[in-house]
Image (cartoon, rainbow, N blue to C red; front, side):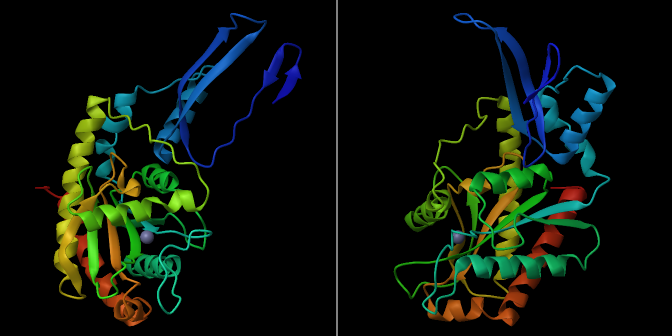
Length: 311
Ligand code: ZN
């Protein structure tokens, strides 16, 4: 903040990601001298940010905002002429190591290796744009991961993890989608463990202020959920041909990282670091390559469905 000249001052706000100005007003203070400036900024996609900037340039001096409903509805039109956007999210990172194996393998290391290898393999295929929430050993909050998916207007978000369980005999991969009602007690416990990520890093957990009151957002959320379920089923089908899965491998629970209302999202637990056999496989690049093959086949089937006739 600084004074630009007599009667004019400038306030600069810098942000880690694109945003839009949702609301701006200047009000006179009731009990004291002066005025106060109230600005509501919302996280947005790169495209929305560019549009808002263009708007602002066209109407210099005034800050225009797009109505909320347009922001969600405006997306469909752009689907046709752009690549299929995949955001890969290697779980944990930095101060948050995630689960640990008996041989000392850290979940954050496995998830990053898998995501980097998956990205490299996807880059060989035309028509995909691949983004990573992190490409190094870095801590990100769960909200930040969701924000990055929305920033890129992802068509698919895959969060990659490796679980741990008190019974070391449990092994195999699981595919999760989000739900307020968990499919079973173990899934509920897994979601609680994964959601602890923010707390481990000392980030205060607030109840997320979902815009559920908005009926349009609710509709979008429901449609997104259908796509998430479809991809999860496809992924389970493909993985089952290549690697071991647990019983009922498509499960659901309240994972925070899967809560983007407009991005089909799944969380893939590749296996259990608490199981020596799984830990060995997760460390094996050849095993990972097999799993990556299945993920890619599932992505190809899903993206064809989205870009084509659907159904
Ligand atoms: Zn995890």
